[in-house]
Amino acid sequence: MDRRDVIGLIGLGVTATCAGAASTVRDRFAGVWKLISYENKPNDGEVFQVYGPNPVGRITYDKAGRMSALLMRPGRKAIANPRSATVEELREIQSGFVAYFGTYDVDEASRTVIHHVQAALNPSWPGTDLRRTYEFSENRLTLRAMQPNGVLTLVWEREPD
Image 1: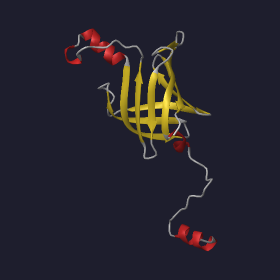
Image 2 (image 1 turned 45 degrees about the vertical axis):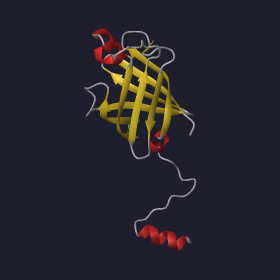
Image 3 (image 1 turned 90 degrees about the horizontal axis):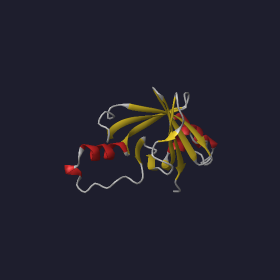
Image 4 (image 1 turned 135 degrees about the vertical axis):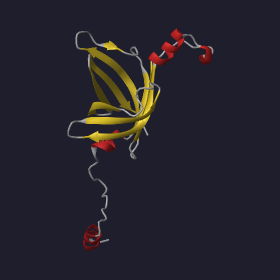
């Protein structure tokens, strides 16, 4: 294909992707990320690790705009039969685990990723948008969620393909 062919295709509304073309910020999200830290910094207090020093979690973004997130506090107590769990056991299940999925958009101007929640362990989340500012640094992704009483900071590390 020569230059005239390319110009003709562009004139028809067809665009070509060249090897080495710059990737978008959205492309940088695509993949599987491992949770490294999950911290809460209240406006009036010290930083604390929400799920301890070694939280377990994965967040996945795909190029089609779908995402899912699973976060867990390790060492949760096993429950013999969740169907007959006590109120305290149910509280332990819910407070030590976050799970949701949906779609996502990236607002580059505000450096924000928006998770459009379709289903979640927390019944108040479906139909809502979870907004996180983002920052990439080498193979790490930092997401920050502004809360009324402080800031949640989650650091993720890209998993190899």
